[in-house]
Length: 489
Image (tube, rainbow, N blue to C red; front, side):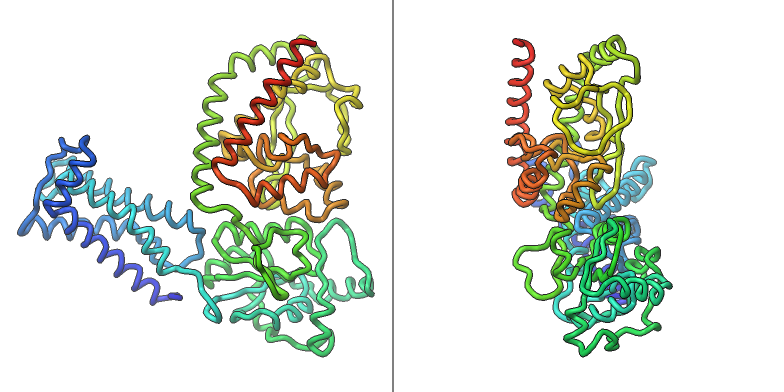
């Protein structure tokens, strides 16, 4: 595992070498012949074989432009795989545009257009693989680990079971007071105040008592929880271990969100397994959190599918949405749209917009069937039976807040009630919520949260592009049946 100046040197040297290789390969007559054969549209780019000073100028300019464009990637920094790939490709394109600009102004040493296109095409494919190779995940004792928690005693109890070098910990400064207040109330009983609890009394006993000092001391403190992102970047962290005694949703899932954003592996004590998605086959006291349960290719295909679906839906249904808006205004007083905060990935929230189907009054978070709700308007009854009240959510899919298929986004107030009954409900937060899902096509509703959660977790484990397509087809068939049923009533 390369870190520090070694990473800077190897990444820069490797980039320069790959740029040189790209120029030389693109300058071969065989390469240019194959290029124009398989990409006939580029026949007009006039392939040219460089030699002498022209070739040296091409090498020098390419190295300066492209190797210089990827300069930010020479600094070791944790990143997700997809983020690394896209950032490298974007930087290569910037370098290519720089070279193209020189050609646009008819500079004396400009690169031939065909050569430039082949160089950029080669590097867009090869260079991301190079950065992923040198930033490969560590194994054994090579990882750089930080412990994140809200109580120093808990952190010391967890530290001995961490099998990688721990460079320090993040913890609030009020650890002693928090520890005393919790200990008075934790004589074998769980403390429940809406947070997420993890006790390590069993770990403490194996370490000869609750006050057995761990491998960390006050000098190992890297700061409070607010410094998490800075520490992940500054120390090039590979693994983060969460060791909270009594964390609220914002602290716990905020830490997981930061790990996901920077491509840092996250581990938790096995007692947290009911609150997070864990990698299959984990054994031992610490388990790996499955921050990205889907393959990178599935992520890309899913986003493309969402974007295309949303664009087509907005174009096709705009006239119908205008008719629905007029009907809502004529049917009852109040706004056309109804907005509600829903829970997104890692416990964050986003506004969901729907056509208003009820009289605007106070809301009750308790899930109820439509037949028991006397606030639904006449137009609202039709909208709900035909699912047309969901059409404005196409905009949320377009902006990326939602997906077409995924666990149904629940109201934040309703989530709190569901969490109290089912702690594993939080596992739904590891993927983007969807307009429809496996639970919806099987008629599982929030009034039966156990069944709904079972379908949602099954979808998370089985997700693929074709599985999403099958669910969408079944949902469209289901909607058409509901629409026909409403017309014939």
